[in-house]
Image (cartoon, rainbow, N blue to C red; front, side, top):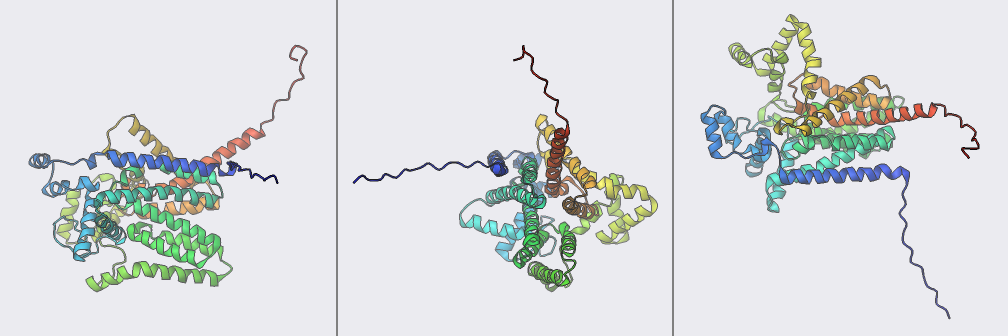
Length: 464
């Protein structure tokens, strides 16, 4: 009896055109991962350079550093900045002493306050606890954690844009623009709020899109929890929830029970995240503190149009009047609009917006040259295209994304505006740019296809 032999076939690789964006996304993520690893090992940037005690002492004697700055310089190189170091001190204080407080004066004492919201410090507490458990340097583990958050943000930009516009190529362009943007590769090596803040608000947007598509309660609940945690990292995004609820109202305008149910779900999720913080502040400080107590400095710094006035004079006047920082800043703003309306209006609109986006943040820590010149050019065109798209496009999806951008700009322009705060909204600009670039390419293709093709001439005997 002849035995039947089975043929072992080699599985064929199925290459489908619609999967090309996925393959290219994988390439983008791989390249970004390699860039992260290179920068993690080499760690460039003047803010990451450790100064010797002799150098610090020499600059102190020369008057280039104050006693306060000299004390910080001993540690800031490891954490990337003053704030990064103070966040690390805060997290370790909470772990070791069980006391929550941000020591803005770097006094070395155990402080107890509500100077910053708890979102970022609690992340650091978890990371530091894991680092000590597995015997890894705390700062190193923060960098590794941030690296994966950066990669996750690139992926989220792809899925968010692809879902909103129903176009994977738009998602690919949006994610690619952010993957090759300079500033995330600086901030992932710091202990600042930018990297986790961007990840959590992008995750919240993704969950909101899922909730709109499916109308499932669990996605609405997860959106509320994640969004509010993002707010506990960077409170300036809080009003964006009003835009989200407006979208819900429009979608369910004929079913009031549905949008009321969603409101209850969101309120419950928000209460789980924010209520413990509010209760803690009220019990310990006997006052209602929804977010934090440090906004006064931002009001003060933002109340000087184009730096025309001396902050020293501001401080002296504030002291003479015996006013709180926020009260004094609001007085100066009101006084400014009454005496020179045009100057102050331009400052709170065009002026502050320009200050946020005039350069890609952190570029000043790196030497100049062709690379940094290209980084500036890349940033400039990314911002300009996003703003033009926001102004021109009337597609409902772009209007929603523009709403996020506009709310952020309006809220930010009330306070101090610096390139660091501009970077925080760059991912939203990448979404607008992804839409714009693919739309322009599609329009060009349509225009080319409409051009009548030249009729073929009959071949002559010589040509044949």
